Image (cartoon, rainbow, N blue to C red):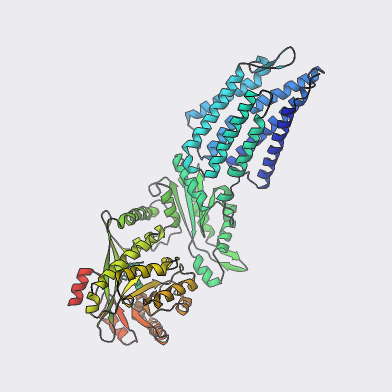
Length: 639
Ligand code: C2E
Ligand code: CA
Ligand code: CA
């Protein structure tokens, strides 16, 4: 009497348990909606049924000789094993292909080969009872390999090599975690096959496959690192990787970017704590409007929808549809709020969006000035081409000495004498020519190199002060603009002190201007930085008072020496009585707060006359002079 084949049963049972575990976690965590999820589940089922037939075959082996029925059952088990197992490597190849983001284009000739090889092997397995090419049973009812089994092995190797090549060619588009899980699968399966080949009676291959699949579940299927925990959508990092993948695989994709544009106003008017709640509202809507698997939360209030296999027209229609939702109100804690959004749609690649980097411009770059469209497509997005060019210009700017410092004089109201100057940066690029600061400074801020430009300006100004010319002309101080985001960076005050001390000038010759903006969200920190620098001798001005959301909070908590009133208030005072009252009282308020007041943008004698009746300390504007290069400025003040 024969005995059970224990290794077959034990390894089969272990593989079965692993498959069940994988299946359970996949379903519990609802990873069933994407193509790779579905193929993964198919892989699990394949190994699962193989494991069942292995257990069955191992059990029946002992009973083979008892009766013909048992023998028939045994044969069926072996038959099932081959019929199902043949599918494993082609399906694994399809899985790797999907994970790598490579689509089988409908025309691809290779696709026919992939399918044909699979069809032949499957046919061999299915027709074996008639042909006995794959295997047969001898007169002792013992299993005998046939020549066709080598074809099956060769085909499996074919698919595994293809999958391996896929993996290598899309290296960049996968996270290390995903890559290692897929490599682990190759490794563990190869080890299993090898052991089984060498020790014919250790049937470990299936067990190895199940283990490999478990590794894939933990690292590829589980997308924790790709998911934004607040919204449940994919995060920015996932977007970057996926876009790289699409480009690498030359797979066109339609991108829709939805940007909430009035989040900060809503926060200020409703007293809500953060933008997350607003993002949450829109996220809920998006979940119902588009498949979850296509949505990324690129930053707070900005969502990206990536649609493959869709036409430009379909993307536009979707963009219009999403935009229409913002025509009606949103319900938030018993409040009805009106959210504003701009929806941008473009193909990747297209004229405007050539690569992943450009896609991120579409996501992050400021919208064109004066834009009033709610949906931007096609040529509406040409500003991104310019943005791209400006970014290239900025990144080569420091080396190529594209930047220079101009000075615009400021005057004392009392005696109309020169008081000082504001240093204003200018840029001249070899390709784009002059680029206005309003255009390149936001780009430099976004690129994170505004600090280097500000340092350059500060160094130039220090050198100018060091030359002694400003002091000779009785200039009190020179104003230097600082980017408020930079001010809040750790070590900022030390950094400024270092530059100025190196130049050897007196610190009270420098007056730093900062503009209160939404970016300045931590007044405590900002106030600390300003006080530190003030205590070492510098002066501070608040720039552009009267624009944006000049926040009373900033005035109260930040210790400015001078308030610079924006030209818009002056224009207003010129035009209407109300505007005049506003300017007059603004000046009065600051004087009572013991601040000096400077009015910017004085262009005409009439404007200067209006200001003469107010308690303004300093004036600045084209009426006196535009910003001039250092040489012209020196010539100007010499006169
Ligand atoms: P800002 O600090 O408010 O600078 C004043 C702007 O108003 C300058 O524009 C100046 O040329 C312009 N201006 C001066 N007088 C008049 C006038 O009478 N009428 C009109 N219509 N405009 C006048 P500019 O040089 O184009 O600078 C724009 C902005 O770029 C600046 O606004 C400032 O926010 C930023 N900026 C300039 N230089 C620097 C810098 O070195 N670092 C940083 N971080 N920002 C800078
Ligand atoms: Ca300024
Ligand atoms: Ca200003």
